[in-house]
Amino acid sequence: MKEQPKGNLVTPIGPIHFCMAQADHVFLHTENELITIRGIPYHVSYHCYLIDGQWTAKDWYEPHLSRKDRYLEPSLAARKTARTTLANAWSEHLTAHPELSRQAALAKAESEVEKLADELEALEQKVSEKRKELAAAKKMLAVV
Image (cartoon, rainbow, N blue to C red; front, top):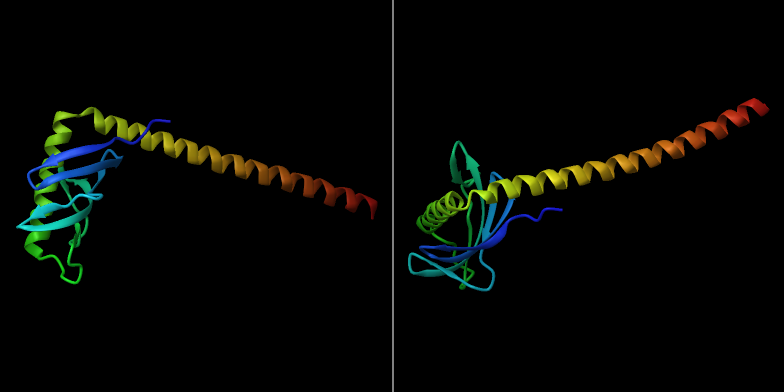
């Protein structure tokens, strides 16, 4: 099975990891490292989507930013900076590596095919069991 594209992305605010779930969806995140946004270090988790030709978030809360001093919420300006900077960095990276979109699309399609094949196998097994039950019921009916 084709693996989802994964790797590291260097951005103006620091290095970040990526994993393309499908051709129009990438998960950008930090692990142990922090990136600095407006002078404050954050852990970042961002689901970025291709919407109308632009990489962006689907809701206003993305990206999720977590400060070291966790009791303080990130500012809207920090969230907006992260959103814009990371989306632009991803867009530039994808432009330089267009094969990632194809690899992500293939991985997603293969995953869907495998899932459907598993579901079909389970359904076929149920049908087989029901056929046996039906045959047994018909046999009992013939006896009566």
